[in-house]
Structure formats: C-alpha cells, structure tokens
Image 1: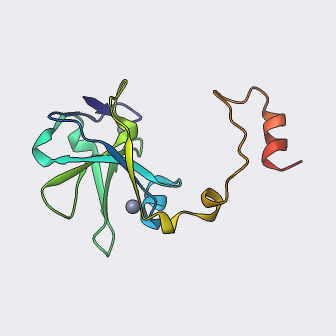
Image 2 (image 1 turned 90 degrees about the horizontal axis):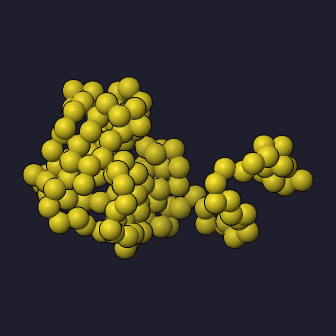
Length: 142
Ligand SMILES: [Zn+2]
Ligand SMILES: [Zn+2]
C-alpha cells in the first residue's frame, strides 16, 4: 500500500499486514489536523519505506512529547515514529486507492469538541454543494 502527501513530493510504502484504523479525538490531534480527530493506523517501524521526499519531512515535538511530522511543502501530516515502542503512526488520509480496512476504535472521545458531539441534524451532500449562496444560508441557519 502506497501513500503520498497533498503535493505528492513525499511518498511512502507500507508493507506487511494492513492493520485496522482508529480515530483519536484528543485536543492535540484536533490542533495537529485542524479538524475533529486524526484517523490512522499503527504498524511496526520496519514496515514503512520512504519512496521519495523523506528530506522534505519536518517535525514538531510538543513539551509533553507529542510529535507530529509533516510535509514542509504542503503541510500534510506524514508517518511518524510513536513515543511508545517501535511503531509508526500512518495518517489514513494519505493512503492511495481503495483500502480493505475499517475504523475499529475511537480514543479520547471525552475530548470531542462540542460541535462534533452535538451534531445531530447534518445535511448530507454526496459531493460539493452546487450553490454557494444556498450553502452559506445553511451554515448561517437562515
Ligand atoms: Zn507535500
Ligand atoms: Zn490524539
């Protein structure tokens, strides 16, 4: 299974048995991703091979040890070594093509933002809304 960042300069391969996914809803993942949670999988460090762009990987480590690696060109999170054990965390959104796996765990759910916890009446669009004015009215509750 291959993965690449948004700009495509960083590309990697994950070999071995493909694990299931989990989502982390902690406050740090919210900041690191800019959204409600991170979605990823964990694999042995030896299962990840950089195909290109490894020199473009930037890294940030918070005082508490949380580390996030990201593409220095486009900002996509990229695989990074976890604090615990010899494991790599792989951001699921970077994986290419259909993936025969599913989300099997949600962690830190008590930290979900209220706007996610309270969401009950969402309109569903299978693609992009076709009318921006109508969409703005929806977002502004008019
Ligand atoms: Zn990139
Ligand atoms: Zn988290």
